[in-house]
Structures are given as structure tokens and as C-alpha cells.
Length: 432
Image (cartoon, rainbow, N blue to C red; front, top):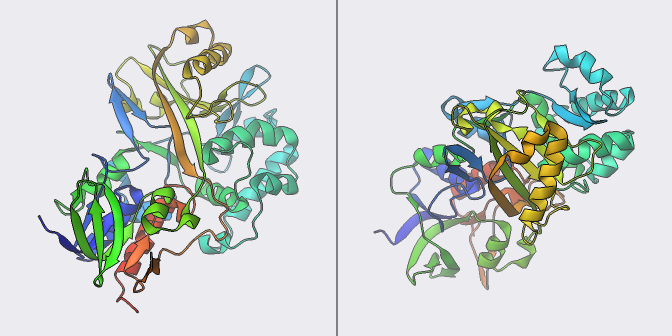
């Protein structure tokens, strides 16, 4: 096997795969070193007893620019959610729809008891503001926390607590809503300009599509990088089996804390938000709509739930239904929480939603995801990919780069776009 490459990419997650796709399209000699036995990083899917289970509740926003550039949506066989949400209010679900995309929902949305009429008008204003100007200009807007942005916009406490906290809390993995207001406007823009969808074969179909398009043999699994150094004008990449490779250029496409360790820069480290996801199966769907369900005015561990097999029938065998339930990390720590105790509380809440049958649902699997999203202040939103120093050695510009969603928005878009930016930097002529 080769021991020297023009370019080596450390990490086969979405950032590394996107970087590799761009390099492959421009004829660059490269290889990806992936520690695990599969591509995709945090985007994972299992098939258990014929059910398709994503690791945590994950979706693709089809408006993501990097996804539109790199992915074949038709080949992914995307299954869209119905726009809007079902919100628990006064013991029943009420539809809070998207009247811009589903005009027939306008009356139901306006009469929905969640929030006031003024709140609905403020949603329209926030939606319009998020779509104004370019994405780059949006990234440069003055930043505050999401909760401060919502309060300043005049949203009522009930609208914030019953809609924004469970909904955005699931997106950001942060129900305190301390996430940057730039992220709020970014996701509102993406929601307005495309679908929320999942591939028919699970979210892992996204990295699988990217990896399948790479030249054969360029993705090397079970290759764990333990050391990165600059020696004799080249990069030396030490592997866990004691071997080493060399390269003229390197892209470090691992998560933030691993990148910090490899590059010797603790400032790259980030805290993480986690989540816990329960999957239940039953013979009959409890609700036939393709809408996300939010806990609304209720207390309890459930943040949101969805009959995911309504959205993508391929997620369940014929005659079966699959329900995905997300629990707020504040109610259950993904690393130390008691899943059995939480499951009992989840069943109590599901029984109040769907009747006694919910207590008999089969809990097929529980995913504890302590490293769901990096926690970032997004100031600035887009951070440089280029690394100019490795240990005690200065490195030529454009020969050592990093990529990952911790350098942009914590999202599929952030991971893939940072990979594209890193690849473009690697293709430039090195500068001293």
C-alpha cells in the first residue's frame, strides 16, 4: 500500500467526505483515514428487526446549500415531513401549521390556542427577516442569545415555553435557548426555503451516498490516527498500529476535541450538548399525520415525538408503526441518566397522549447521545479552516486545514460546507 499521498484526510464524517468529494472532482490524489468501520461520523443508522433507527432524532433540511451542491436528493428517496407541528394544549393536540406552504392551515393556525394572534404575526416577521439578504449577511448580523432575541421580538411567555423551547430545544439540543440568535435565524431560513425530510433508508444514506461516489480504495476504515507532526517538509501521520504515512497536505476532519488534541491547540475544544432517543413499536399507528408532536403546556420528559413510519414507511415492516421520542437532556443526562426510570415516565406521558395502548408498546431501542452537537457562540459564524502552526513548526498556508461543524453552524450544512471550504484551500498553491 502507498505510504505517501498528496493529501490525507483524517476523519470520514460528513466534513471529511465533503472535502474528499470536492478533491475527487478536481483530480487530486487523496485518501481518507477513518477510525471506525463505517463512514458518516455522528450520522448513524441501525436496522433492528426490520426497523430503521437513526442515532437520535435527525433530519435533513433540503434548503441547506452544501447539501444541494453535493447530494442527489432523488437517489436518497427523501420522505418529507408535513410542514408545521402538533402541540399539546389543554389535554389535546392542536395544529400549528405553516400557512405559507399549506394555505389551508391558515385558519387552524390562527385559532390555535398556542400563543396569541400577535405571536403568529411575530413568527411571520421572524420568517421574513431570516430570508432577507444573503446567507453570508445573515451570519454577520448582531448576535445575542435565542431567548433574548425572542423576548426582544415581543413573543409571549406561553409561545416561548410551549412552542419554541421544545421545538428549537430539539434542533439546538438546548431548551435554555442560549444558542446564538444567528442560529435561530439560520434555521428559520432553512425551514422556510425547503423541506424537512429523511432518506427512505435512514440518515446514514447521506454519508453512504458521498462515500460511494469516491474513487475505489480512497476510504480506509479502521485507521486510527494518534499523532500528527511536521517533519522534513512533509506531514507525518502516526497510526494506532505503530505505522505511519506521510503527506504533502492534511485535512483534519474530526470533531473539535479530537482536532484540538491532534493539532495541539486546546482553544479548539468545545463543550457538547446531548440527547436521548427512545424508539417504540406497535401494530397500529397512534396518529396518521406526518407532523412533529411537541409537549406544549405539559410537563414531563418528552420534548418531541413523531410516528416516523408515517413520514417514511420504509422505517418499519409492513403492518407495524415506529415512534421516535426525544427526551430533553435536562430531564435525562445522556451519559449518566437512568433509562429505565425515564422510560417509565415517558410511557406515562405517552399514555396520556394516546391511551392505555401506549403502555404496551415495545421499546425497541434507546440511544444515548452525549455528543450530539458542539456548543458554540457563533461569533464569528464561519471560522478559518487554515492552520498555520503545528507544535513548534510553522506550516505553509493551505497545506494544513481543519473542517467540521464546530467551524460553522452545528448542523449538516456546517459540516459539509466546512469540508468544501477546506478542500478549496488545499487546492491552492502553498504559500510560505
